[in-house]
Image (tube, rainbow, N blue to C red):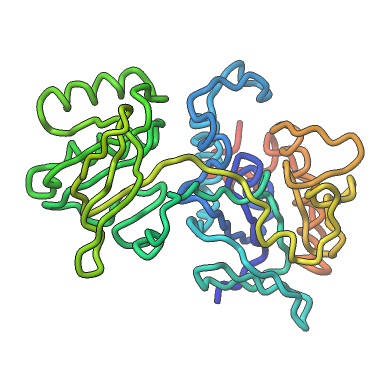
Length: 346
């Protein structure tokens, strides 16, 4: 059981800035996100596309913004619980919330702040009857295989994440290398940086990996283990591809998920909040970013930053009842400088 001041659900930009604001108020915080990495929608949908409306930053990218926010919260040493989805929130007799994930992780927190964007991103799965029995073992979604030494590995997908996975596997040292690496995509066009595509072409030419165009239409199993894939090419010719480990990158789709079952007032699949505290209909549970709605709501990152700030100041008195919460500026406060690990200006 993790006892803490706050649980932040969502590790996108707004969730990360929420951690920063809570950290300035010395609220101990844990973060949960369904994705295997921080960054949220920015990292999944446009990691390298330019973003021009972050204050004081003429241009950045989803990846760079997430990296900056992670660097900003480093002084607080916030624990992250990634690859987990919050499945249940329950109010306890002492007023705190018991938060549970689908992986069995539990938290006891004074407040919960939902920064889940448009919902938890779920991987698009292969539509092949029976293949789900291999999930978590030989079949993984949006993740590299756990072990690849001496194995036939297939990476299915055509985006940057899929190509990065295949390149990483093909570049492993000989003592860790798979028997073969095949990048399989339904088209001969990849949605990835040109530098990565050029590296792939070099590895293919050197015989260190294979690029195959086609779609998985079936599979074969031997003694309960995934052994082969049936791949239909552009001419509808079916090929049998040996496979010991399959990593699938077919994109992600946001789903509201269990949030709808937590008893919170909603409007058009978004959480209704007040604009003074960004608290939901349940006292102690807050919502910031794209997951919330209120009159005049704009779905912008900068608006989420504002919401996170007010939510933090509203949450802190619930974490520290009876304690005066001081208002301090990071430019002048010695205490904030101490928390952030920076020297006090002369």
